[in-house]
Image 1 (cartoon, rainbow, N blue to C red):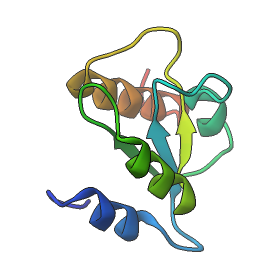
Image 2: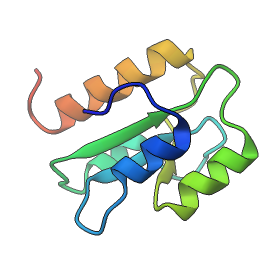
Image 3: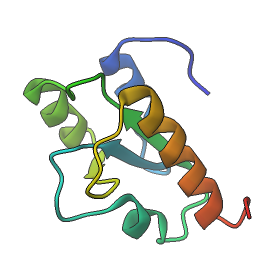
Image 4: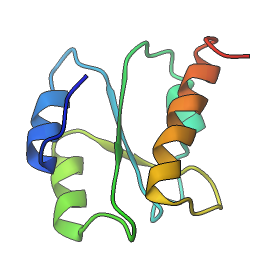
Length: 99
């Protein structure tokens, strides 16, 4: 687990050819859902959650260039501090580690 760092450092730490599935919670994404991507059987996931109001376009482009996939949590827009918790809980549930 990575401690507090800037966005570029977080991207660099999570990127690698055999690294985890890297997902960006993106309220602008309309095609790919978190549930769909987590259903691929990956055992390790890095979740990127932006601040209130979302990431800057430059940050979103940098994430995509680094191999991070934007995903949607669905129709609801959650607060930044809630979205990460919801996504982590959903990942644990889909992996069979909860409920």
